[in-house]
Length: 268
Ligand code: RET
Image (tube, rainbow, N blue to C red; front, side, top):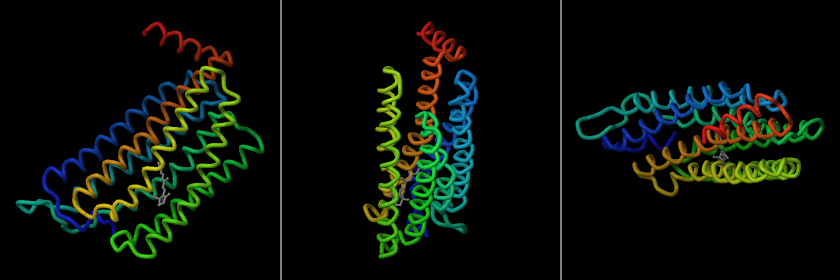
């Protein structure tokens, strides 16, 4: 059971969580439109990244919409507090959503990094195996988050081993990308790495939250940092990869990319 179900919430606490879920869903809907609308200025070689951002955004809008609905139906106003009434709230949706989004986000990295052939296949397999193993072992662990017993810590530790493997392969991929990229784009790949490292590492912190602060405020903070991490790791990341892909397309002489860059420069 998720530790969200252990507490009653003030009107403010309840609304902040619901508001953040709604805001996050709206950001994803906006980035969905952006990534489809700008896909034409990206060379066919990299264009899949725009469509994959679209896939991530659709799945994330559905997830956040469901979380918002679940949050609203789980707690009822009893005159002084929002207390559990009927359904349980569950973070399980998040893990199901990551099962789609994590492999897709990592595939986008390989595409924009320009990795091809046997190396692509090898890294892709490592990403999918490490990513899914990380999520599903963590999923088993989180069922014990209220007790914080052996199941929580052991599966969390196993999940972390897969995460470190995944981080290593991502780091390798970004090093390769930096070597191949034109000078102006190298720095952007460094930003991708920092964004990746920071936003992904927030998720294990959210996993630990029931042990750090088992309070109603702890619930609010956990859901705020989940949304922060979601926006950074999916939406900002998707936009940053689209910008890189467009710059690389322009450098390779792809006309619509050059025109888009010129139009942007004129507007500034
Ligand atoms: C878990 C369990 C505890 C240990 C670790 C975890 C890592 C989770 C991560 C999730 C990333 C999710 C993303 C979703 C985007 O849609 C499973 C919480 C290390 C890194 C990027």
